[in-house]
Length: 211
Picture 1 (tube, rainbow, N blue to C red):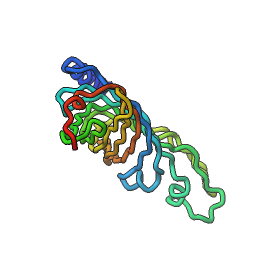
Picture 2 (picture 1 turned 30 degrees about the vertical axis):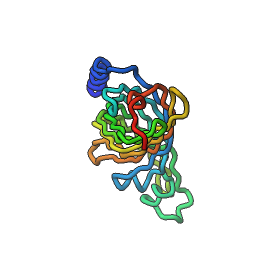
Picture 3 (picture 1 turned 135 degrees about the vertical axis):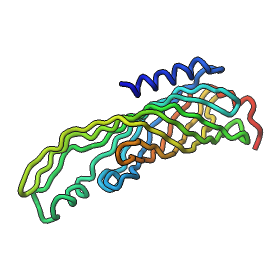
């Protein structure tokens, strides 16, 4: 529980220090596994969903608290190929999906050279994550086994870029991509690509310079 207490303290401090009304966002998209090798080779790209609350602290700076959930499905064929030959007609596996719940505090820097309708940005963040691999049931010609559910907590970080495009007076379309890292024994790296909606008018929009 210690990582979650730390994260809650960070968000409390950010809220106290904020100088503008918060903005809220929700998003969904796809996520691609990158490392370690077995994560990349044995699990398929999956989906993500989540939300964030953000505070403007300067015309081109925001701090946000983000919660994101990612799920990756086991590639049955690739996994079974590591255990048996393709001639084993009894080979089968069920379960084994990987989920990652990530809680992070992020700093976002918006380009000062933007229009009022389009705002590209860079972000970097730190937080905590929980990686869970569901139970797997494995059957081959010579045996039937189960691999138990496994969960672990680890520090997390992320970096990437995105943009917001104004679609109404107080709402924007969000598109964002980047690399998330979970510092497990073998660092887990994955690439979420997200699309969503942001509710709230940022401070930077009032001071944006034309392209």
